[in-house]
Length: 106
Image (cartoon, rainbow, N blue to C red):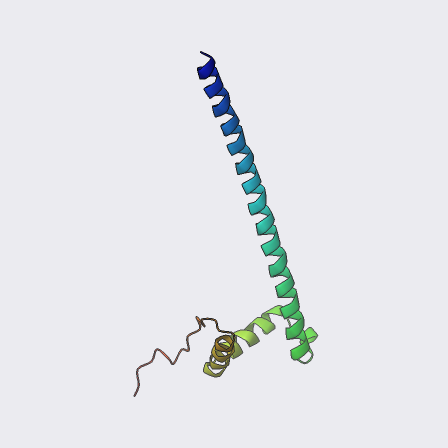
């Protein structure tokens, strides 16, 4: 009987350890999520500052106007080509496709 009780205690200890590890993992995942969110917020703030510095009198434009400007300029073949070149210089895959790249040759 002593061995059965000893095994039961070992099982209980192992289950407790598993619960503690699961809680620790949950906390780590939450910290990781929070850190990713902080980094994303900082990146967005920094890029917004860059944008405002590059667009003359940007404070007079609405968010919608800025969005329209970016959509119309960034989606051009020229802008996509430059972005692709920049990404290639960094050694990363581009994932950016030019709209004319999919068109058949005439």
